[in-house]
Length: 98
Image 1: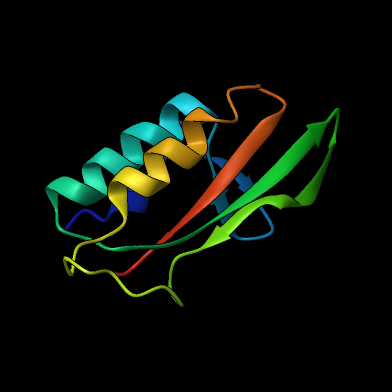
Image 2 (image 1 turned 180 degrees about the horizontal axis):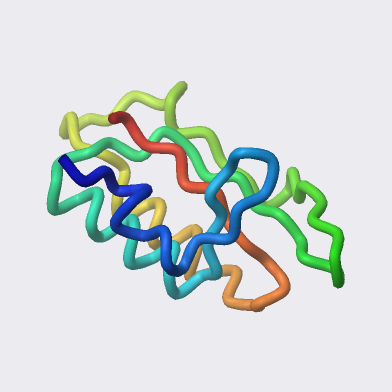
């Protein structure tokens, strides 16, 4: 069975065994997670500076510690979070429940 990582491998940026995505691809991945009912656990942002990639803690969010009133997967919150940071110097690791 094809995994989400496989499905998005053509747009992923691989770094230290992590798949990272530019904002437009991160949004597509979040929407696909919603279609498959895979809960978003968190988003980690990274700044691309030439050949370097460094974490951006102020642009990361952890949904795994939040309680959802509707028992859903934080897809809307994840999309809104990404939409706030549309600069292509950022890439995102989307952590979801497999």
